[in-house]
Image (tube, rainbow, N blue to C red; front, side):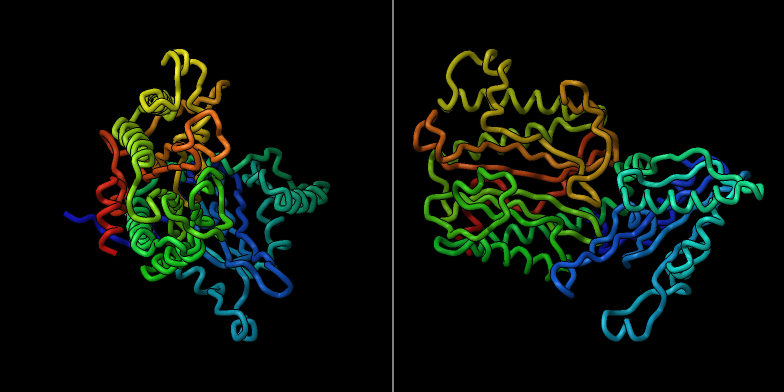
Length: 447
């Protein structure tokens, strides 16, 4: 049975997110969440708008300069208020339609909605008599705004008005909620992965010696948009040859050379949710002996780590498994020499596997959520059903590494899938992006 495909979360998910947060609030408290503002790119043009992800998680509302207020009374009754930009016919002629206050209540299931210009009047009133205020401490500008409102309330203390005495950082609460995905969120991330897989297929089919990296990037973006994902989840990495040894290479402006590999780290964003897939393949469509040997080692390491995922497993344990496997592999290939246990103890693999094995994935490509790292920087948090993560081992051997034979130099390989934790194991969301040597060479030969 094929699992349902969706292109957006239903309203019920956003109301559940708010309810889950309100359940964490103490009675007689208030929580305040700002939306993002548009960011000027140059002069009178703006970057494509990206909503504050905590705000979006709680509302689904995708306009700038809004504010969500959640209030909980002494008896536990909850109320939600959304402040938004007003309807403005002149603005809408030039810049686009706005939801407005009436539709905000109807379409986003909040109790009330007011124009954003009323916050300085109404927020101090909402704060009066509350015992605790929740807001994100990591936003210094908004923190200043909150303290300004609290100052207004405190100025009326001689009239018997009580000011909240306890301030609580809301970010860790929302981050924990976001870490566990609902069935609808998982369905959306499956679809984002499917679209991204189609884009990686297209990139392999369109790749040719002499093309430029940015031309392959254009093919990715084309495929994302063609299937309803208007934006990439992050700046695509399209790195030919030695550029693959620059982990966050995004210039994408070099020519593609014969007998080199192309590393593509690219994922679509669908209704705010990210996919994050990396594939590495030969520009001319055929792996040479050294490329194939290193590629198979990385692929086997990825599959070994993924197959170990289940509730209770940790990134720390997966790293032990993967590092040992890659160390033995490089020893077998002759890139390492010496005693295996000493190489492992010295963490020699970090010379070529220089980043982490994976990260949380969701509304952000490097999604929020505590890894519970210990003082050795080991990520010891036990996996739970509903968590989604990347698994992305890699090997990076730059051209100027004279410690290995010339035939290995300039090779950079990463292979990355997106994995959801299930009741008893895992689900690989990345199912339609070729990854074996045979799959890749066959696809490229038929393009």
